Image (cartoon, rainbow, N blue to C red):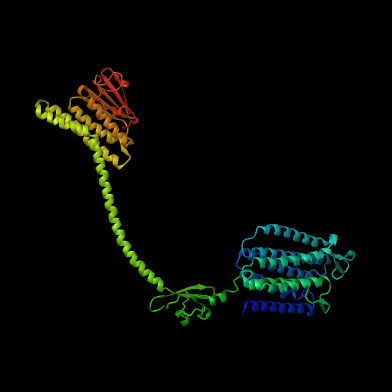
Length: 557
């Protein structure tokens, strides 16, 4: 069945329902608590409409507005029943309930306009410029109706509201309300038509106009007193006519596709390209797609209580999926031939990549070993460069001891002192290469070993390290190198040597070395003294002793 036929059939069903309810209202006897018996079936129709909107509308804002429209229709029917069933004998309450009729109908039309702006693309910029004045006008007209007893600009009654339910006339505000309702409804359809991008739906826009035109015709003839009466009653009162007008308009808008909904999901499922079926809990097929490939589990009803199908093709290229849904199960199949082919290729590629990864790992290990060797080589070269002077002097002392045996003992002690420096400096350099800091204890061990060999040369020595702390590796190397240079420079005249480490500073007192150093340290040093350390330490002379403090900022160029 085409969309047009389905929509027209819907309107025909609503029309039949309207006629039946109207006949009940006209011909059914009215007794207490059953006056206007059409109220009850009409209330059922309004609640069914509310549930339909809540269940079938996809977009949240649109659904909220449409549920609001159905809720207002329900409230309107309840007010109608309250007027005739409970308060017909209480004139002032019944009259104000009658006024309240116009509040739902006005806001139904307003919500219809708001729904039109929520369908399709995002709300346009002019939305607020249109909706805000529309809300203000709707509220103003609603207030005018509710306060009619004060001004009678909507309905005019005889003095004292005598026979108010039958003997009244309409004024200009009444026709303005009718015109405003018709304007909002027609504007809603027009906006939906303009914002719709589906050509098939645009071609069927005349279908929802049919109930709208009926409503406008009813409002016009009723206002003019020309709507037909049967058995002394209007053949369809104001609430019935407007409620069926709104129901027909919005339901037909949904059916022709101007408002997105889920009412076509069954047809969509049948026309889908996937091979799938939906079965109830007894295994009976409810929906079946038109795909040519059958589902093995579906034909045999092999659906367990958990929804899993146990059948699959013998070639292993068909995968059956299933999932429990409300009231039954849905299951579908996938042809995974291509996926299996791709997986086989990926497995082959993975094996190749694994081999390449192993080669890369070995290559990286080799590079790492080379880098470590280069680093060690560079460190050894730096150590050799820094201790080259001591190495040369050891060679010279050895040659001298061979030619002058009387100097053997003295040269041997000096060689031990220089060798201790070379060993300890190399050890400190290797520690520096491993990290950026060295414990002060390592510097203490190096200095104490040097002082031990100085003591073997007959020179008094003392060493005091009063704290343990981490020092910059470069600073430790520079401090030990400077200590060695000072020691070697002062050694010929040295009688005593005291070394103290406190508060991060290394202090040396060289007894008897005053003549080795200049009187004024600011004038410079003898040519043989290492000027490279002139910025890393400071010294002063007192008597025949020299006091040296190696500053924390000691730097080697």
